[in-house]
Amino acid sequence: MLFSLLTFISMQTFAQKFGVQGGVNLANMLAKDDEATYSDDFTMNMGYNAGVTFELGFGDLISLEAGILAETKGFKWENVMGMDVTTKVNLLYIDVPVLLKVGPTLGPVKIFGAAGPYIGYGVTGKFKSESGDQSETQDVEWGSDAEESDFKPLDYGAKFGVGAEFMKFTFGAYYALGLANISPSTEGGAKINNKVISISLGYKFGK
Image 1 (cartoon, helix red, strand yellow):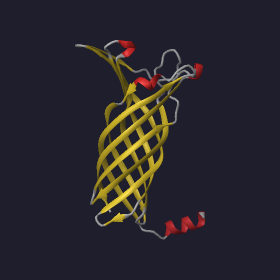
Image 2 (tube, helix red, strand yellow):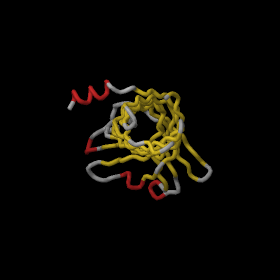
Image 3 (spheres, one colour):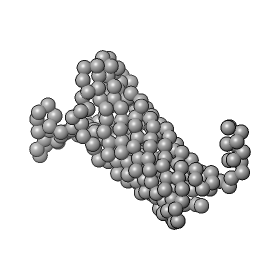
Image 4 (cartoon, one colour):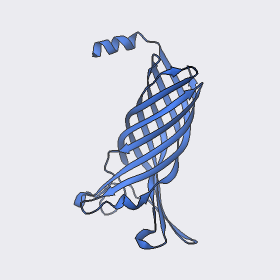
């Protein structure tokens, strides 16, 4: 099977495309331990995604796409502890997804499904609490110290999506499931995972 795949690839003319993309992220988190699931009260926090991509095509049906993307993650928590308080956790990651894209071309439109792994690193973040006309902001502390840190910076997981390409314009909707436990403390089974829905528009350069 491997020999057949390599033979098939070697006979193809690779199509190479560079692209830019940007869009909206709807981020949330799973936060739990052995006692409770605290994220049941979390809601999605709106943010953005933006970056560049490189796509290598193997024939008409299959391509491999990698990207370097700025992605916002986090969550929103309203009415904290029964009080009229909204807390937002805004995290900015640099993500590198590698996606296998498969789909047919129907006239001028190419439809595709995509799946693959991603790895990311948290570079900055803030906690923001609002109550009435008052607000308070605090920087996120990245690290592995159970006492001093808020989140571990390294994230990785699986990404899935569907989309379409028309001429050189692209549209995609994706779901990224974080598999890394980004909680600095694992005492009592503590676990935090990122979950992000992304909608993006892009433009491809090349053939």
